Image 1 (cartoon, rainbow, N blue to C red):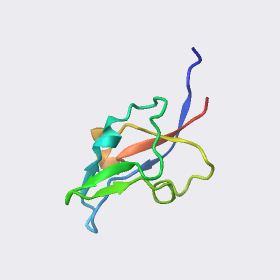
Image 2 (cartoon, rainbow, N blue to C red):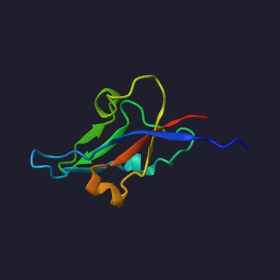
Image 3 (cartoon, rainbow, N blue to C red):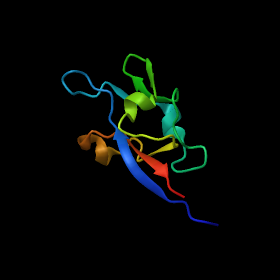
Image 4 (cartoon, helix red, strand yellow):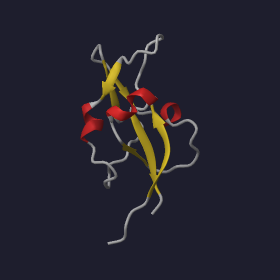
Length: 98
């Protein structure tokens, strides 16, 4: 089989309050996605965070990936990776190159 190649294109931070404290966590639907698997990309409307009050935040490309131009699928990787908490990264976004 042909190897698939992905490139990191950005990241999404956890939702935070005005003091910078995390006020939500990774949504179970996002946590369950297989990293870099066919169909494992995020699209507008997919739930990505569950807030402490139980409300949910969907992925919105215009908000969560506003610096990216082009119409390509975004694959979340390193989802909820503890090593990235201090860096303000809930997950990394990658695009499929080949």
